[in-house]
Image 1 (tube, rainbow, N blue to C red):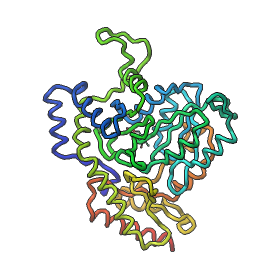
Image 2: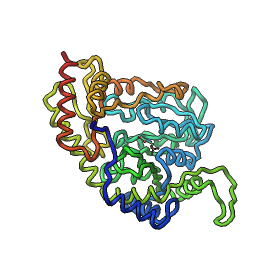
Image 3: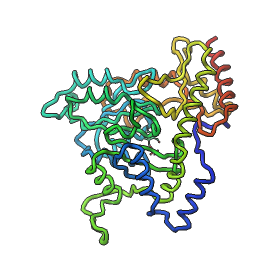
Image 4: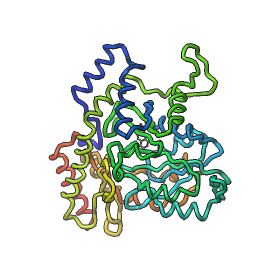
Length: 385
Ligand SMILES: Cc1ncc(COP(=O)(O)O)c(C=O)c1O
């Protein structure tokens, strides 16, 4: 089996975990602070709060922004379901923004038109006319590691008083103009889930330039404990702190982050070379101002030529033990989120229909990349004929 994206761990990770075990520091311990400090430094000095998962990070970041059951939160249609679930955990309602069918990234023109035509703004508060609810926040997703154009998004949002929480779960190591994603001046979250570029088995992080947000996230992640000695709790909090064991593993992985991102980019580049002569397919383009983490290697098919779409090719690759994956199903097409207000889901449907996520673990060999490309090429030829 050539897996889609699996962890790449070695002796250093084993040593780090063993050290934590030897110290008897499984839950609380020094690796958590080390991880937070190192990520903060990497992101230009923002506050960093380690939590159990990226999903928990999203939940807490939104709560810390004041998102409540009276609010709407804008989420793009093409993302892992965790992004929208976190909105629902807050009791808030998602407002689903469509995506560019080529890149899967939030459709900024569509968003701007919606805010202009379907919403009212007074004293920096924006209300969506149909639901009568306030749009409190937006969660742009740096999908598959490619950054959203945050400068353009900032410009669009200027008049509307909508807070930003960047979902950078897939984009650790990506760059946006001259800055690292996660250090762009907004609250952002990371994931260290097993399929991410670096992993702790599980793990998440809230990054924020705002010390009050960081303090609130830390407080809520620790069951909202108000006293260091007594178990005094004046609010309902969550058990979302990252265990020291996971932090130790992630610190060891962090030493390899730059080489892992370089390998991810290499793999995507190699696929691009191997598919260069095949008509009507292309690897996901990179904006001139961006450096994607290439968390996923994405192949796009021209739907006018590959009229059956990506699905039969993905199924055949999987049958050949090649871990290809589809893009995300549009969130508004998933039963738990069918009631959500949608701007339009067509871009996300087209993206799903034309996209293949190819195997791209950082440990994949060049021979495996070539084998995946050869199998894909054969299936594309059949699909075209
Ligand atoms: C875009 C996106 N958001 C959020 C998450 C949730 O992170 P976690 O699995 O660490 O909870 C993930 C991945 O798992 C993701 O890909």
